[in-house]
Image 1 (cartoon, rainbow, N blue to C red):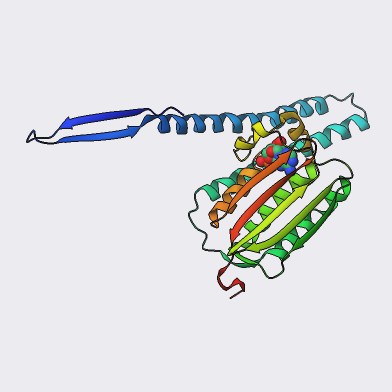
Image 2 (cartoon, rainbow, N blue to C red; image 1 turned 135 degrees about the vertical axis):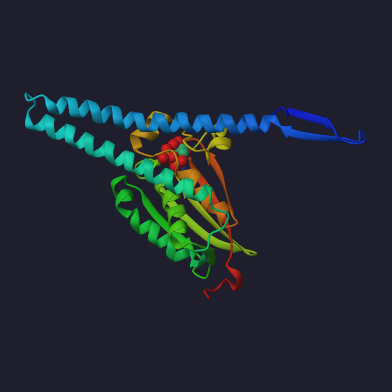
Length: 262
Ligand code: ADP
């Protein structure tokens, strides 16, 4: 991006020196733009379910609805309320993560056990979507994290790998250490992600296919949460993908020192 600077200069009293305050306007503008984009996104995400909640209530109010229609609109209310709940939960998680520099709850956590917990938690979703999951993670790897956060990281990645897959597809999680780093890969045989979307993928509310993703039921915050968790614990995340073939997310986290629990 084009750099824009403003220089404020003032000559101080003895006339010998100049005080210059340089501020990077382009950065400020960018931050302001991101902030207003975020507010716009949140508003939109809240409005969509609310609109459908209000419409369902209106329809339920009229007395001439048969039992089947009424039950359909109750289901809509249920679903949309749940969506609002997820959105608010994810926004709270993200805002907490954004305000954290380090996590005092971090402790050595076994990676394989955490992957196993995430996979178990999602096994029903996988069955429903006709997706098989398997994992091969070095059982000796420990990383320093808060246990719930590490589980959330894997759960979000594996849930996406299921959601953006095809019936009969596969999800594979591998984990091995490379020097002092735990390298964990979540691979799927799903729809893939076109290259032009990759740079923005970890932004809040960024979706490749808005209508499809909404239908599938995500908040658009999952990957942003994943990235914040990885970075909070001194790691990072990257992605490789091929449209129609599948996607691999790679998470790198420093191994807990000594590579064993305390
Ligand atoms: P969402 O709640 O929409 O799933 P995420 O932040 O988790 O939000 O993901 C952002 C977008 O990235 C998704 O809407 C989807 O378009 C794309 N995406 C994420 N994971 C995958 C994947 N494994 N395969 C294909 N596309 C994916």
